[in-house]
Image (cartoon, rainbow, N blue to C red; front, side, top):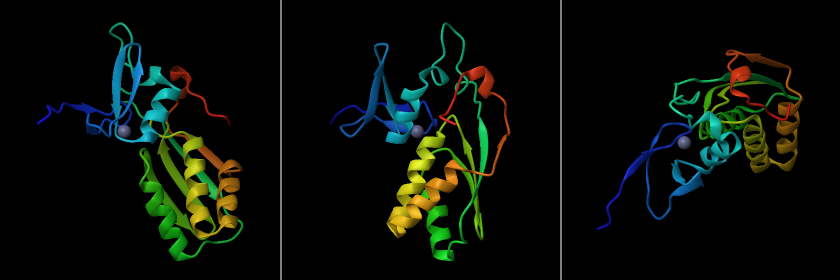
Length: 165
Ligand SMILES: [Zn+2]
């Protein structure tokens, strides 16, 4: 029997075990274990959001969230079946707090500390492509040219986070 140690995913704070399948990364001589590749990639993009320095906790260690809301306007309403798929598969991601689909509008609330806009954009494209290649492109375009974005929390300024928008 091997001794297993459990850790907390530094991005979403879920419990993870280190075993042969561990998703891990090294940073400044320490090994960090993650619940998912999404969390590992998020961590690698802005390590300082998750690791404090010299006794100063990072925003995540403080329990902060950076909630963002993005509203997408599609070219036409999606069917109930597609809406259900988008809803279910987006919720498989870490950091997705809310998904609402109403006709041709899709609104997504997410925690920028757990999911970046690029990760959501890629996920939407992937979901759409499972239905038809055309829908993947439509969802991606709608996500890039969203109609409204509301910062529910202005932490972004102090945490030096930025996306490519
Ligand atoms: Zn995680």
